[in-house]
Length: 144
Image (cartoon, rainbow, N blue to C red; front, side, top):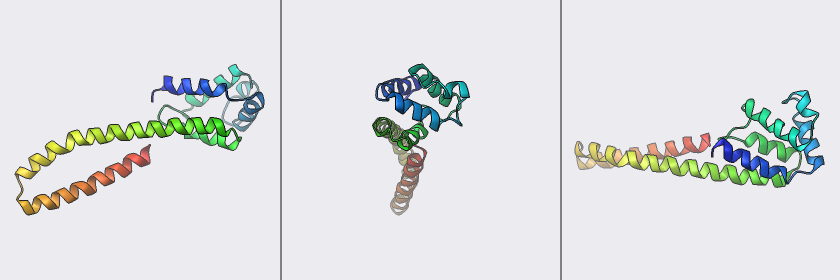
């Protein structure tokens, strides 16, 4: 997901927030944003608040779990749910890209290695490769 798409999602969220939701959001994030932003719970002020979170790298196109946690804490569950759906979709896309990249790399590597090994060693190398892929998958999942 790029930052433009995340910003579009955040704009969509604004339609789901009541004035009281915005006030709670500004209050909750009072320590994380400048006072001039905190004291302006209007639509414009809330967009400035989001910009401030981007500037501080508290949210970005790869990780906006901080914002999900904030919405959960202030009981804006609809907003949190929308962000969670997009975060899961983003993680799924990243995982698919990683698997595709690995699938492009692994067959030529295996073929090269297999030519140099006898049958018994090939089976051992294949099991080692599977373990490697499992570890790579776990690392990718932890990062996303």
